[in-house]
View 1 (cartoon, rainbow, N blue to C red):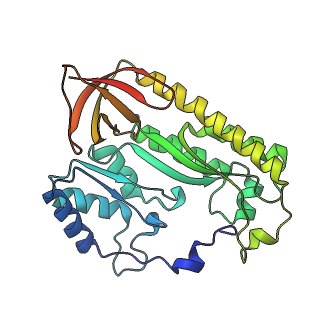
View 2 (cartoon, rainbow, N blue to C red):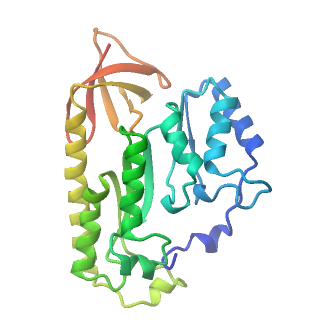
Length: 275
């Protein structure tokens, strides 16, 4: 992309062979790990530098098939345009693949996406979310969005803001644009700093409203919380959850999977009662 400095520091993507990934996951599970997250700079390009036709979807299926004791498998940020058909089918067929995808969307206006040198259009992003939700109705989406990319007008920004509702985004990572020396975007006409700051604040506020609506929809439901620190953890959809014990003195060590009822939320996390 025209704004990204990562390739200058890390070089081209390199895929870890599937056998090594499976072996590492197995070792983690044998050590007590209950959730594994597959991560990388661009995990949807997995396998393109390896012999054979295995891609990310095939790797997901291989992990789940060869490590049946693994209870949760989660994906980090993906490029939705490179999500292979097997990955989408795995979303539908593999309950241990968590119903949460974080998408590298960046913007919601086609001209800005073109100037970013992104591989997708606005319509592509919306269509992907609709398709994934059709396959996995309980799925939740996060996304990266950049505020104030060079040449962004108010109309272009509003298209990004509207993308939150059009794609049904819940977990937002909002970045005010900051030029990186040596990148093409640093040489483009820049948006004024105060405007960038104001637009980033508007995106974050829209994200807070979207999260509040989605958390409200969870109230009254049963969830499974993976405890990560005292009385705190995450649900399969990556909602942060606070656990209230059903009996005095209950506590759960990190790594516990607790069935709970959602009784309320505080705008940031679910408030759950165990049992």
